Amino acid sequence: MAIFRMRQCGAAAAIAAMFVGMVVSSGSAQTPTPSANDLDPKVLAYKLPDQIAWKDDPTGAKMAVLEGDPSKPGLYIVLVKWTPHHMSHPHWHPHDRFITVISGTWWVGTGAKFDPDKTVAMPAGSFVTHFAKQIHYDGAKDSEAVLEIVGEGPATATPAEAK
Image (cartoon, rainbow, N blue to C red):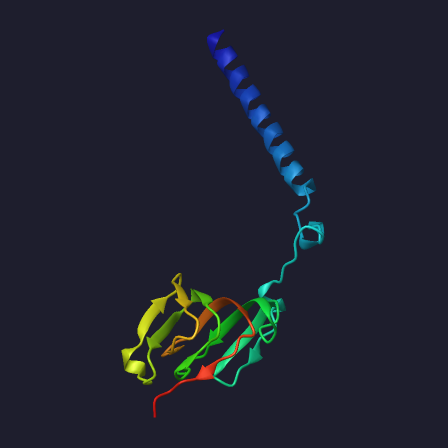
């Protein structure tokens, strides 16, 4: 009799497991995957990577404006992609700029004498502040570096290289 009950329990457990499996698999097939169309545009705005418009910059970098207009007064947020072997020469900006290294290694130097060998590596995840009216230069060496820069416009750069 005990063996009979064990077989009944085993069979019941197997049937229960099959039932749970059917419910779980049918439930997941009927649940729609959330998509961008489910987001309320009154709540947030976004751009996926393939929607970000990159433009060439004369310094050998590429730039994408995420917010604001760097040429006008007010807050701006840009992405800068330094291509390999391109660096700016000594210059300064009229306002503080706040930079986060998103990927790659960004190389930074200070002073009016341009010397890429004296730049310091800022790896991905680094945060740098360029203080207003202070001379610096920066860029990429052997690999690309992507930065997010937050600042106050207009975002001008005044050359300051010692001759």
